[in-house]
Amino acid sequence: MITTVDYHTGGEPFRIVTGGVPEIPGADVLSRRTAAMETLDDVRRLLCHEPRGHADMYGCFLVPPNDPGAHLGVLFWHKDGFSTACGHGTIALGAYAVQEGLVQAEPDGETDVVIDVPSGRVTARVRCSEGRVRAVTFVSVPSYVIARGVAAGGAKADISYGGAIYASVPAGALGLSVEPRHLTALIEHARRIKADLADHPASRHPSDDRLSGVYGVIFYDELPDVDGQAHQRNVTVFADGEVDRSPCGSGTAARMALLHDSGLRGTLVHDSIVGSTFLARVAEAGEQGVVPEVEGMAYRTGRHTFELDPEDPIGTGFALR
Image (cartoon, rainbow, N blue to C red; front, side, top):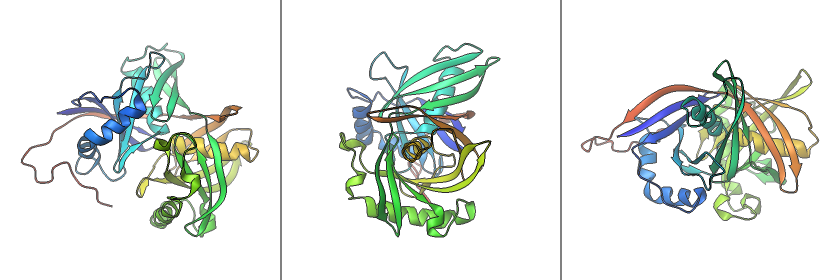
């Protein structure tokens, strides 16, 4: 039996495993990720694949932090494996930690929930009012531009890092827009772009190859400013054709690295393909890149106990796309 608490952030699911999983060994969160890939992939499948999940499911295993300076450690997973970063999941974890009493918070004000993820240490800044969580700001790892104008999949992509490596492409360059009616075509383009970038030097992390590889392709539309703030709509196609329903937290961090490099100094209103919104800004800039802050909100959707009948011929499930 495996227990979970489920959330959604901007429409994107996030399943937090709270019990039934053995301790995952490792000296730090990044090494625990490697161990989980080797020993707990069947549990990931069970919770993520149909009939208990679906092809665009997301979730995590909670693990100890790297040191007492953080409240939680976390390993993110999806239908194709374990990711190095997840901004929408970090927002959900901030809400979860406060709502479940793991981190004590004042009924009015902000509380930092510090979380070790495979790509580094991040913060979920939880804002409460009248005892309720009202918003959560994801403070990313340093984010930076890797390359611009890289030819891939019949387009030119800008490559940047926001805890994972993303390729950004304007949807209009492909004759498309970020709308549900174009989603199938955008997924097909994303797969081609990722395949072309697989062996490109821009897909390699400069210091730790465990963080290498283009994780997602971000298609975006430029929209009219909102009260003087930059405004874009995006859809992130990550892993193997998976679609982020939210504006994508770590993807937004990667976008902010590009936009800051292009001169943006204000707030980005970042919409998703389903109409949810994150607000993003650069909090600071330094030698390692910029530190984006991405504000959103997560809502609890349920608590679950999952089982696997040993006689079930479907076993740990399947992915149908």
